[in-house]
Image 1 (cartoon, helix red, strand yellow):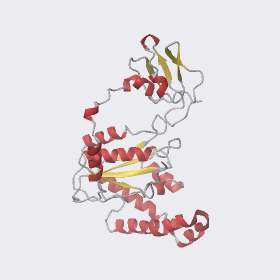
Image 2: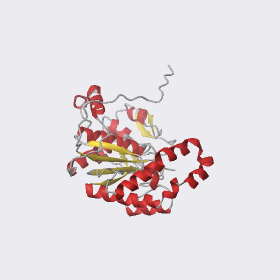
Image 3: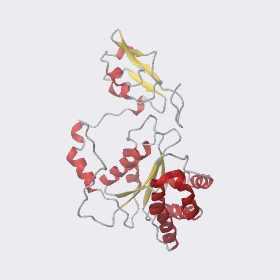
Image 4: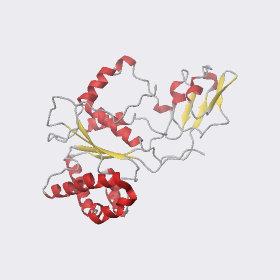
Length: 306
């Protein structure tokens, strides 16, 4: 049985051109589904795959002679491209400099993000690794300040009808069920956030997405690996930084539009196709501020078991 996604429930079709096979075995070494094996110096399709070809394309990409083609699960040989030369890639110091220069930007110039930059950001984000192909990441594109503002206003209207979620009686009722940590988060973060979002919006101040010129919402599906939307959003953020845009990840919207009938209606109104275990909004725009220094960050722990 093939691994299902929202895009396909069939395994991919492996096609081997035996006359082109050099017998190097590279394809067998990279196939973690065990769909391939060597016999008499040639590759062949195995009788004991783990799942059936998931369409990762590794065998097709590594074959030096074009002896293997993968068709299905949204993959075909037409999607192969030559890898950039190593000297064309950024080195570690360049990557680190890019990451260190990035700050979370919530103040933007009154300038829209060009469609060409959006396409470049999406092109980079599509290269993000995924749990299982094909990607089940979906992207909602709010491509103008007018659209991000309209989304924020609708979200605040939605929150007005959800204020019971942070009411005293509800928090008291739920504390024994969701524990001390969740209770502290709701009282110290979620409740004041509700108030700030809705009260400030009534005064014309948008704290939801800061009237950013562009926002992308990365979310999965019921089949998606929970990490996939977050990784894709991160790639988009880094790509935008390289293009001279400021970015900020917004984590508060996603969890509040996942559960219940009101959330379902909100998603439908905004063409969000699925509820998703994990998801992330990223806002983009030309910064109106310029930082002079960075801030060193640390992890909660780094346990080296060597």
